[in-house]
Image (cartoon, rainbow, N blue to C red; front, side):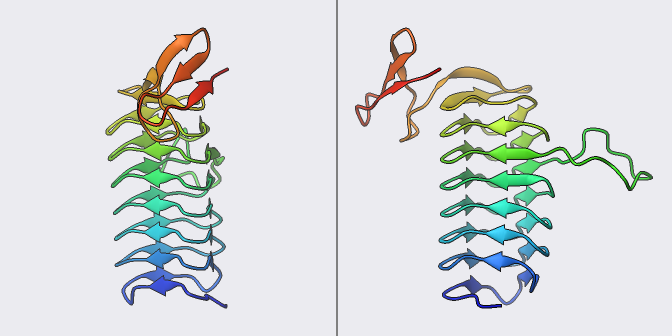
Length: 184
C-alpha cells in the first residue's frame, strides 16, 4: 500500500489494509486496525487505538491513549483530547457476540476534552466543544459547549473555541475573533 509522506513509529501496529492519508504521523504503540481510513495531515498520538472500519477525516489531532471503536466516524479538523473514549454498544455483555453497533459521528471542527466518554448513537455537531471528563449521552448541537455527567449545554463556542455571547435571539458574537454566528 502506498503511504506517501506518512510517518509510522516502529512500535506502532498498522494494518496493511488501513488507508493512511499523506502527511499523517502515527506515534508510539498506536494500533490501527484493518480497513480503517485516516485522512491527510492527521496526528495519531501514543497508544491510540483505532478499530476496524473507523473513518477519520483530514487534519485530525488524536491525543495519547484515545480509543475509537467500530461504528465511529470523525470529520475534518477535529481535536480528541487524551484518554477520551467512544463506546459502540449500548448493552455490552461478554457472552454476546452478535451485538448491534451504535454509530457515532463527530462533525467538522469539534473538540472533545480529556477523559470524555462519548456514548454510541450520538452526533457531535460542527465546532462543538465537550468539556474534560464529560459523559455525552445525547446529540450535541453545532457550536454547543457541553460538560458534566451527563453532559449538558452550558453555552456556545465560536470556530476559534472561545465562548460566544448572545447578541439577540439566535445571533451570537465572539469577542476574540469578532465573528457573528447565527444558531438554529
